[in-house]
Amino acid sequence: MNKRRNFLIALVVVILTQGCMPSQINPQPALPTSQNVLPAATRTQVMPTAQSATLVPTQTLAAPTETALPKVTISAVKGNLFIRRGPGLAYNPIGVLVKGTSADVIARDVLSDWVQVAIPDSDHSGWVSIQTDYSSLEGELSSVPDFTFTDWPVPAYLYNCSEHDMYIMPGEIVLTSYFTHPNNQVWLNPGTYTVYDYVMPGRPQVKKVEMREGMDQAILYDGTGTSHKCP
Image 1 (cartoon, rainbow, N blue to C red):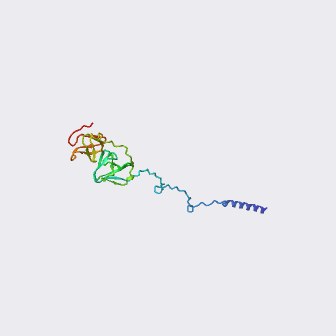
Image 2: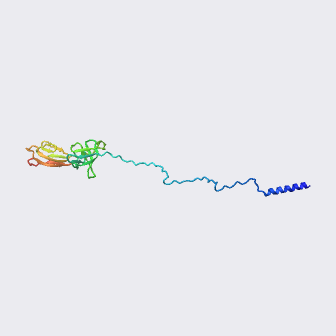
Image 3: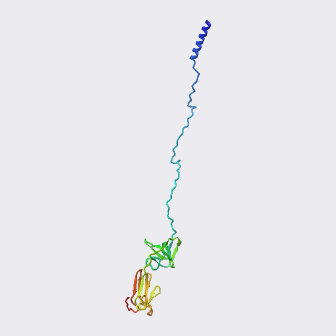
């Protein structure tokens, strides 16, 4: 009886002792200190600056440009050169290229050896012959555009209404009298001409005539001063 009692008392003491002791079941992990805490990796978004930004090149389309033609000039080298309305001596002079000066060639006639030039100190253009020794061409003429001038010259006629044959200079033209050849007219290019009596000794001068496109003029006197009328 006493043994049983003592055993119960001892069991109660053991139970009470274990209830007062701290429990070691499932111990909580120790909290990390500030010394052993590693910083968590963070994603930092860096905005590009004006210096670090890489510009993507863009394609620039260049505007089409006209190709400049090689420059060609013509100069008056031994005297003055007439600049005419068209490519030929039958056209009126409209300007003069003075000796020692030049003009830009802007076109060439495909049917003759004449070039179209910009008249110096003017907004107009005209034509100059390249067949004469008074002109000198500089540059490659084949680079100049071709041009066909279709405005034909207007004829200018000189009539002889006298009884004597007449001699006309320049040109060394003999214009017979009206009485031997009624249709005695001659087409003259624009310019100044001197008329001489061809049948009189010494060929006295009869008159000077200034011819222009579309003009008709008549010789009414011979070398004796005798006047005649044209029919």
